[in-house]
Length: 220
Image (cartoon, rainbow, N blue to C red; front, side):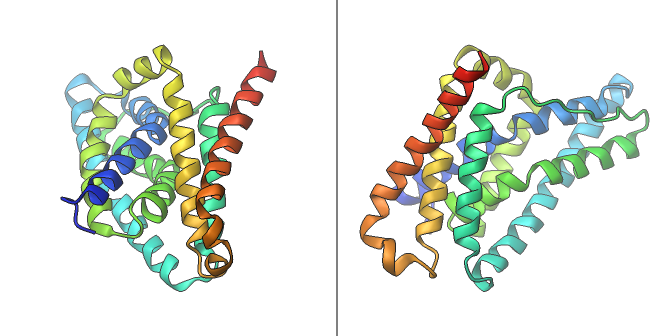
């Protein structure tokens, strides 16, 4: 996909939005892992942890692309999983993170890379399988843009989302749309559902956003 086309630019915008919305927790965890380091080592831990996290995500993305192309029904399963991730993004806003703070640089960097890798699985599924359509160039550019922004601007993003919670619902809707699009493209069902693809995408957005609204209302 040519990034300079309208389709390419829209895909890149989707990647950036998905990455930022899904990685807010990752940024918090990274801050927690480095908080016991001296001030002059915290920046080093975050820098090298960020570099390691980008490399790990690119490896995960490459493996996922290969899996998408070789494992039957994986697009269908991945798309359904994205609907759940979109719901959890909006409805499950009280998750806790118990990450042990490290007091030496190597341990802090290791913790950052491992924690970000585990928590970044949803990003990889959403970005690679959905928004990027398996295009590794878009995936790489998107990650290089968004991961550093997320990590160094985590406090700002948390404040913006707290002030404008509707951003989470928009993000949940985008994930639902991307997940539905990913599912209907699976060879197992594409020939059957193709005439109803648009309706399925719209229904997925309504389902995820509606369920999230209901869940949050019931919590109050």
